[in-house]
Length: 164
Length: 326
Length: 102
Image 1 (tube, each protein chain N blue to C red):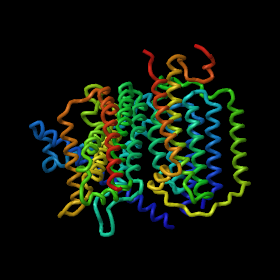
Image 2 (image 1 turned 60 degrees about the horizontal axis):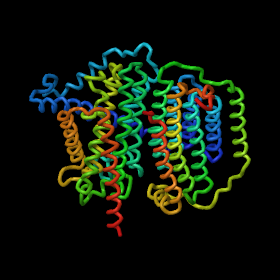
Image 3 (image 1 turned 120 degrees about the vertical axis):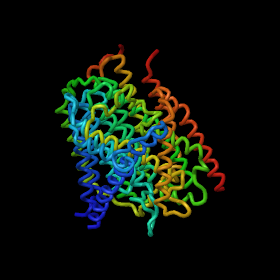
């Protein structure tokens, strides 16, 4: 087995096992803590797919900021009292059936389609190339995302502010 | 089987980085801190253990190793134990992209990533999760408050650090640390970017929770903040994480602003070590000079002063880089 | 050598796990965690297609970067909503938040 295959199976195992812990455990803080190995596994998969810049951004934003945000939200709301309520609602069986059905559907569709690769070689995914791409072909998306960031920043502050 | 050799190289590199950081950064750094603070307070530091007290930290580590590992009764054991692993791991991962000097064939760096500076920012942000888990897992009000305050402070001060890193990367034209050091052949970036250097130093001191930003470990208020409940080897590992992170921030400041390993006569590694310890001396000097900030003063300072100044600096730098290149 | 099919199966499983969390969990913060897992699965799909099917351009990676940024925005606003709801309604369990007007 090549090293890439071993790395892929290891990272896939880490990602999926942590995701199972996130969605099934009854302890919320354990669920939030198990998000971190899941995100780091996805980072490893990005590096296998030659996307190093996306991998760095994934660690910085997902594992470094969104996880901290989720932990803060847990500690400032009901999870912070340490009392554990019932975590799963009545639809658990139906939900599991639907999720399994969607997974089977996606895998079947992906298996039956022949994905013809377009001609072309991998460009060097250096940060310089990504930056050039942002400022040339994708500049509209770039500027739009910055406006969305500004609006969501203001919105989150306004919503979470205490009424005085 | 090329991946086997890469795995072996990574394993050996990990052991080397851990031993080097444990010895040079932590053992020597803790002793240096006690000696420098003593000299600034007109007293002598540790003198008895070893010549001039050099083996003091070794004796302290041996003492800590033989202490009992106490876990609080209703603490969450999984989270309590895994926080101890995350904090030093994130601190040690920082050293992968720092060039320590040159060898015959190229720079003495563990791995010259082409996203080196971004990698450094990413691994510094992993420490926050460990601190939150340490604060929560201790089942202790003071530890929890200390952990939340520390996480808020570290997340806030990551932003000026990131902006200063981007400013230097803008001037060098690349995110790779080796290219940044090579770009300082004629002029160190501390001369071209004094504002960014100052902001980086202030934010680095705040990022590693040192005085004057150490409200989260304030001995007079919170016992020891998020690691109040840790004893024995776990406490030693937290100290390893804290001092390792401080040395990593100083090493990155040397790489980005002070020319890395560049210098006229002496071998490059020696220049790097000299500059690194000069910055560490400045960190310790600041510690024993200033009083402590309150948490709201600290956060206001970052959001309302450091971030606008560093954004302005970035805009002015970008303007000059584009104007010069035309 | 893992090909496109491996990555697609992995992302399908991750998506299904995230969907299970969104549909069956009671705590609002856990539902947000499930949404983050689904977004990660979509990102893996985008980057895998970029490498295996359309290697000439880097649209897949650009799209993945934008999705990561928007996920951060959405997590911030979503958690602000959870905090505001907790303050007035005293609960974060979504099956207890069933009043249109407090």
